[in-house]
Image 1: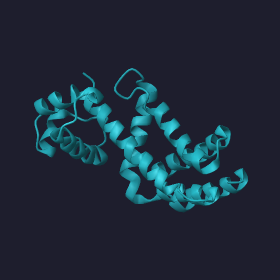
Image 2: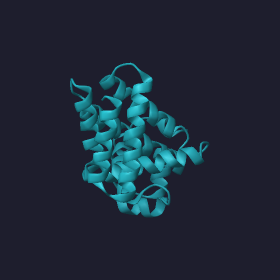
Image 3: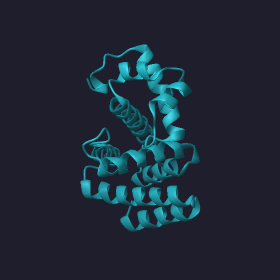
Image 4: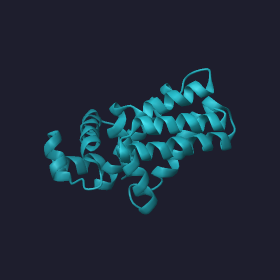
Length: 182
């Protein structure tokens, strides 16, 4: 049974939230059920029962991170002027309060590219569509315009996560957005 096929239960949701907080600070790549279970006050056996498998738990955690990211991006992008919305999206991405979520997103994105048959499978493609949906609500229906802005934001985000240089990456985003006419 996949993580999505499990019937909802308050305990499953509670443990998912606790595991999500754990994953934000520890990542998913080397996650082991025993230390995770201990950290969140559960047991590996309960986690396996509720999520079906470790892969099911990873899938549930990735889905949880996508829900948060999409909700926050949609909120950041809600404005009447496209240029203002894109700048607000970048401000959200550059905010240090979102680093853990964005590192988790980056990990899931990269892993889905190299392990398409594992629990990460499809995460990158779904993420692209999530972002394009948000950007099209801001920029209009032109997929190429949304894709161009997405490329700028993603490139700058990866650079920011690697370097921590907010000023340089923000200046680059603003410069590129001016060239794109956003």
